[in-house]
Length: 331
Image (cartoon, rainbow, N blue to C red):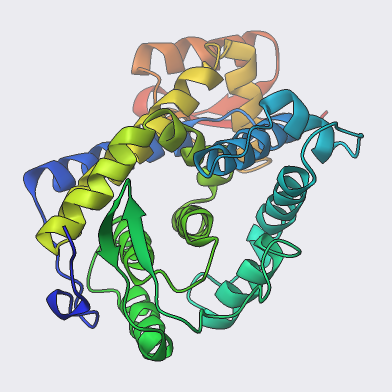
């Protein structure tokens, strides 16, 4: 179905807040709460590298790049890889773009265009520039989508970034809506899909830093048919709700897989006492304070930990019962 731009009002992109959307946002935030409740150090650099490999390979595979995870890893490590020149350039560009993610402003049109320039360098004639001609998206032998005219792109993109900066809606929703609307506007001659996924990842990272370690793109690759079906359904309705629902489900799954992969081992009493020491230092604290900081332990576990600390002379105490105050001994 061809959807004209007249069905879309970009100052307020049309979408609905459905029970499914609210449910997924709640589930995502609960999982983020679990991440924040972990007392072990944040994931090691190898996990960031692993994520970067899967992110780049997943996003480019959707565009038809045939390089596998092993080859992408080798390119990231600076090794020579045998493959098509254009595909190798695509990987090198994407790696550079994703490596810059901490320095980018997700609400900046200037940074957005600059990132396209990096992502598409030596692949298109004018990287980092909005297209100057009109385009249609062909599926099979049928034009499935006619993008807005080129002379409207500058205004449309300014309006889309204005929506992104408006805090009326939850940031997770704004990121998904932005992703869909970007694909609808189709602002570049090439590279729209990878830029949509890249900027969505940047918005997720801005929402919570844990998303630096979570390859949402690789899950989209695994659900590639559903990804395009959600885009097409939103096109048909002139409403991004189906795509928002799909995207949030993918984000939730990626976050759940990340937590499952971490599988933090249960903390030993000694480790819990060490964590508390790092937090309290020389300051006095109660059993309630200890529980509050450790979050997931019971009162009985806290009592056993503190008794162990006293028995091994890690701790000293004053007072009795609920009024007992503990303090770490100086070593």
